[in-house]
Amino acid sequence: MGGKNSLLMKPLNQAGMAVGLIEDKSLKADPTMAAFGQQAAAGLAQVASGQGPSISSMQYQQALADSAAQQQAMAAGARGVNPALAQRNAANATAMSQAEAAQQSAIMAADERRRAQEVLLGAAEQQRSEAMQLRQAQQGRLVQTLSSAGQAAMGGGKKK
Image 1 (cartoon, one colour):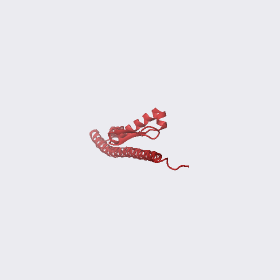
Image 2 (tube, rainbow, N blue to C red):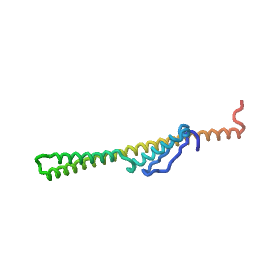
Image 3 (tube, rainbow, N blue to C red):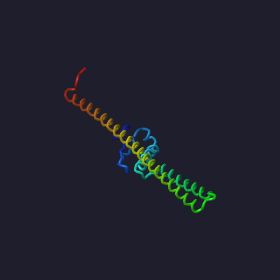
Image 4 (cartoon, rainbow, N blue to C red):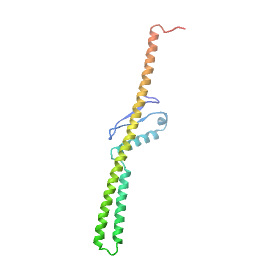
């Protein structure tokens, strides 16, 4: 299998989805693009399996830091209130903020994984479809070649 429309199939990745690239003239001419495509597919597989970089995780960490800083600033700036009570209120508010941030982060992480899985499944489906089209074209050429060979063997077919 070589040529313009052949497929390079990769083994199943960690997320259990086929990852591969369509081999065409542009990828053969530019190995950097082929490598980029492979890296992108591998990155998507990591995100889909929950092991890759996550925007939701970064946002969660930032929300935790912001929440703690804000609550500590409120406790430090409380006037006319018992300092221990202000610290306790700040700690309670921080815990509530962190719980909300954790819940939002979990929802976002699940959505990130779902979207990455959809992209990988779409790519795998496209590869499967293109492989089927290639197989059908090859079978058509084979049937045509065999038909021509059969006609030649039977007397050359129609004579003009």
